[in-house]
Amino acid sequence: MKKNNTNQQILIILSAIGLFALISGCHHDKENAILLLLMEEHQITFSAKTHALDNNDNFSPDGKYLCYDTRGTVYNSDLANTKSIEKVEISTGIETILWNPPSVSGEQAAPGVAAVSWHPFEDKVIFIHGPFLEEVKSRGYYDKPNRTAMEVSADGKQKLIKVDMRDVSTNRPTTPGAHRGGTHRHEYSRDGRRVGFTYDDFLLKQYDRTIGYLEVHPDAPTGYTHYFAVLVKPTVKGQSKSGEIEKAYDDSWVDSAGQQRAFIAKIRSKNDVDYDYALCVVDIPENVDITSAKSGTSVIYPEPPEGIQIRRLTHSGWAGGIVRGSPDGNQIAYFFKDKNNIQQLFIIPVIGSDLDPDVSKQPRQLTWLPEDASAVRWHPSGNWLFCLSNGNVLAIFIGSKDRFGKSVWLSQDNLIREQLVVSPDGNKLAYTIHYPVKDKNGNTMKDVEGNFFRQIFTMDLDWQKLNQAVESDEYRTRNEEF
Image (cartoon, rainbow, N blue to C red; front, side, top):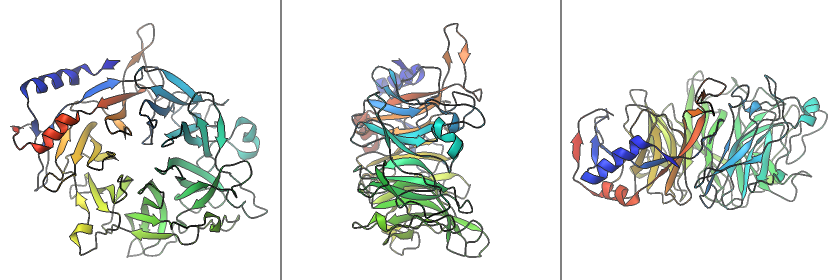
């Protein structure tokens, strides 16, 4: 496998002199020194197509493969023109097509397959699927409110499973357990029992995006495995009153059992004019009956199952995601903009609030970066978080009180890393970089937008050095801005 030679050379130098370098790129009064400890990177894919991880759960349960989609390879970057779901073996770079249905390309295209995630312990993946070609006449082409979830075996045999039913009939109520639009960014709960998603309604387009969940159920619509329910019923766009939610998005499971889903809510402000963007949590009772959800009609929006409760955790005007729950389900990581309008990383207890007088339940800031933080991920131990800023990887330790917030840059260059994911064992990171690839004649090939194709890279985490870094009090200062 090809390695990032620049980083490898720097790593060798640092290792030889035993130096942990300090970076002074922070601007906050409580300036946190950030260590520099470069990790070894490997380029995994080299083919002339896009390899999009898309901020999903892309590692296989055994950590040997990564799944991705190929958006931006044909015609344009719209998901409608995404042709295949694939996997790559990390040790060999061998790519395998998992699903590539017959398709049509163009401004109007179908089916469109994208945004893939691996099941937490089974050898299958779940992803967006638009209308099959034979359905286009009745359903229309791919669109946000015209897509469902599909599962396919990850062995390359292209065994397809239909997950959720779409029913847009207007002359009768929507089929119980079906939806009337499009589900997106499907995420298994860590126990595999439920699937969370964002949702766009086709019949009542005056409602904005919301969130919901699916679970395997004997009363699921015939021919499908899962029963559908929304978790948040939004207020009609532009008609909300103070405190009411108009949109729910950037969501993720908090706990392993799929009983808490955190999300960002667009909420009408107290002045009844502006909007707040707040971190919220949906609590799903352990004994919830998903069939108590109302599927709706052509004039009535679907409603959540009985017993669903929504809690607002932040009230400071803006919060962002994609939010991420800690492995133990006790904390949520999210983003908040500082006084300089820079997006910083925060965590908050799942039972917390920025209005709670108990300091232990209030948010804690983890970064004071000069550029936006993004793409937060938890280490499986819950002791570390990772994020990206200015294209580089940052690791933040939160495993003890005396070392809480100690941060380490794991890369330092001008490459733009995106779509960060963490392996199940926590020993490897993966992300994508727009990186040059040449054809057999030596010509550099580019995607439909004129960029280098997005390639997958991995980073091996040296835990001996990382743990030594956060435990040591002796660092040399490097007075250059990162």
